[in-house]
Length: 392
Image 1: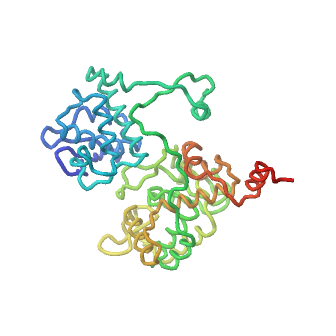
Image 2: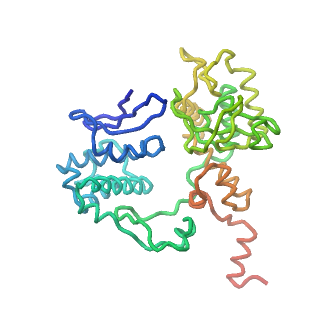
Image 3: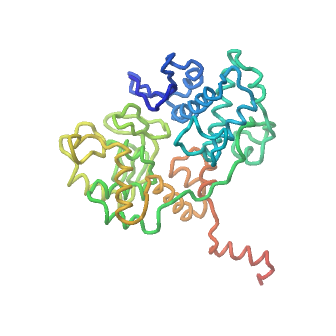
């Protein structure tokens, strides 16, 4: 079953497979499945990145049509021009006619687009299409110290893949977090035990919204020494599942199993006393007795009452509550940013603790986004005084 997701002659389609998994491809309303796009995207199916690459690629393919180019005739300078156009903050002659009403790409999106384009044209070259362009894109560079630190056997690396289309990397610090005191204000503002549980679990658990809305009751081991044996304290198992009716799913695919009625594995998330209290308040007062789907979160109103609650519903609830409370736009990921920053501070800057607690693949993301120096820290103050020659 396929679902159309974009307007225009070229569009991204979400494909639901019989096993419950889903993938994304590009469809041309005139000629059907886009073969070059499918050849590139199919290896990414089910890995979480196929959706992102599909939308990045369809933008580029529409631009090719607008410019009267094809993937066979486009050159390296054309791709450079495309990268400048798609990231332009002011519409110029090559600005936005094929992306009417859309915002320009930011630095992260430009890096993703550069990776997508390089991969797409290298895949084209494998079947003999536009090999000259592939040669211009397939460059290498000397590894930096950070490259060596991140890679297995990094000390023996002599070269790294380079992407001549990629923008200059920006160091990211402190993505947007919650306003001060937002948690307490939101707990007073929301209207149900389910919504209070949402605030508590996002605040204390550092969960992505897809992870939270994809939780099943069986995933929750909210007592000491649970039978799974994975964690001695109360915890939840975040398990990647395809095919949920809400489209909620965990981003990372940690291995897990369900055996003898017990969930084992997945990403283990410690659960705070406040999270446990909010869970029992919700289960005792609002959770429908007849719910057979096994998911934790349910809709509370209308004809779909009792059915699973989708991530979009949670986003809208937080958005409404934030505006009612005078906090402005509240997004679910703000809770994760705030949580990660607090854990990093409490762990004295230990990136490994934050990485494992939050389920990131590497410490680099934690370092780039959250690692920072407290200007009021005594060690920081002492270092400056020493450098200034003021330390006695």
